[in-house]
Image 1 (spheres, helix red, strand yellow):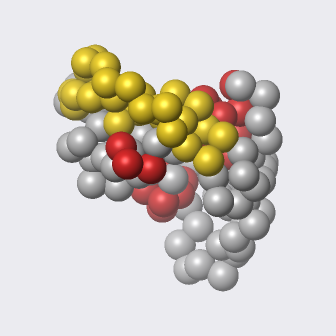
Image 2 (cartoon, one colour):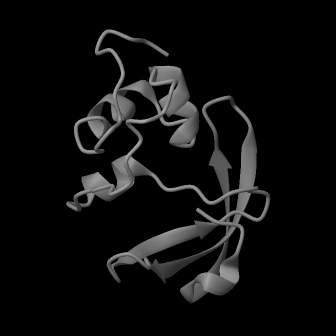
Length: 116
């Protein structure tokens, strides 16, 4: 998701509502495709949400469509490696997907029994 519709290919306007885990909502004003810089793969049906302050990428949406998520960044030197820190770093990703991502992201470590 992004607030910048100009980076989308094949952009088309739509009117839908996005619901967040905290029961807030935001308007989806359009949908389009965007190419990633890293591997030139296309992210299809990226939603345009004008009220977002930062881009958001769903690990579960990517992996459910058969793609692998490999992060080359190393976070092992960080002082705080707990599930709450990673929850914030990963855009408030839910506990189940954080634990799944920790098996794919080098340096993403926290105790297996930690809870959000």
